[in-house]
Length: 198
Image (cartoon, rainbow, N blue to C red; front, top):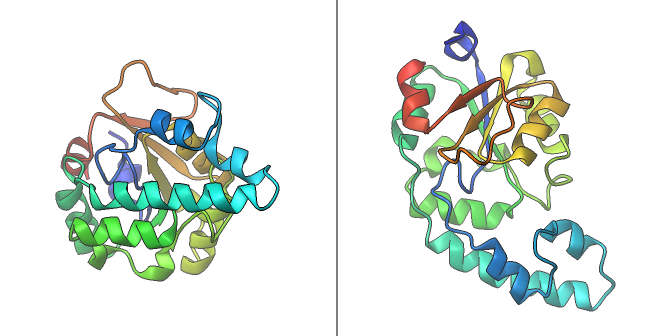
């Protein structure tokens, strides 16, 4: 275990599948929106013309509202966030979800106290991951160097964004088939495992 995470002061999290258990059925979402299997949903929508784009975004919002209400906490999330709060670390979220639905999920899970509104960067607040813009916004808000920040996520977009921003990256996943060692400075099966080490 590197001392870096023990002394890191700036923590940036993905939401779905990282702070929460994965509940989104992305295959269903793609079918609902008539998107090719495996295609990036947000990129597909961004390339559409009006009024089709607005119609599909509205349907995506309906689906994501449903999933936000189903939010379940990831293993170890409370102990990790409480420890980071105790250490007075900055904590933020960069998500491909909207800020509103992120706040709804946090409310469902009783996690809102850890993440001030200005520290939640949704897809309408910055170019979505894997672009690092959202991470850059948080680092600017905190006046923090990327070298003292970490991006935690369950998917390659989180890790790509973290690397592009100059942060350390933590991949949290139990899926042995979904690994990106070249993008991950650290890898843990759960936030509970990570919490024990800081």
